[in-house]
Length: 263
Image (cartoon, rainbow, N blue to C red):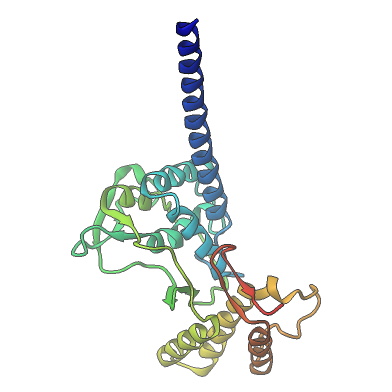
């Protein structure tokens, strides 16, 4: 009887350990699947309807996994979403990877593929900077150029996963955005100083302001046909700012959105 009880307790312990391991493994799989969905929902490099929140959420979702599982998720993403054109989910890697990873060796240059359409040929480290149209201000990534059209086939971004695996480390902390409007104003000022003509600057300002609008739209609770706060001009940009101040729009770390604290 004593042996039987001990055996039973041992079996219970083994079963409990097995269940715990299975639960832990399943949880890791679920978190990787959630990260893959977040990357698929992230904006592409064209910047049409660009929403910085979806890019921040994708980076932070991957960051929360740790480097090993983040790379596993990215490899699965690459298999699930191959390169099929400019606006396909695969192209989001071009924006996600530079924000998610830092170079292990800061003296190394940035990567490019030996062959844009065949990542299996490997990478070369010879670039002085990333070639993406993003400025990060106070933790918020803004797309900086209005793109009206494209042609041809975009390059395969899978090389970025190889670079991250062999040459990079996760950023030290997740992205925690600061004041959305102050950051946007700073970016618009920088870009205006670089603009060659006022018309170009006006289009860029509208592009940046619309990104702010997309970032807060869910908190505004507006109907689809209500454009009173859509910042196509200076007046509505000011109204949008005033409304967001009234609502107390700020970054919600738990929900990973810009949300109202004054409802």
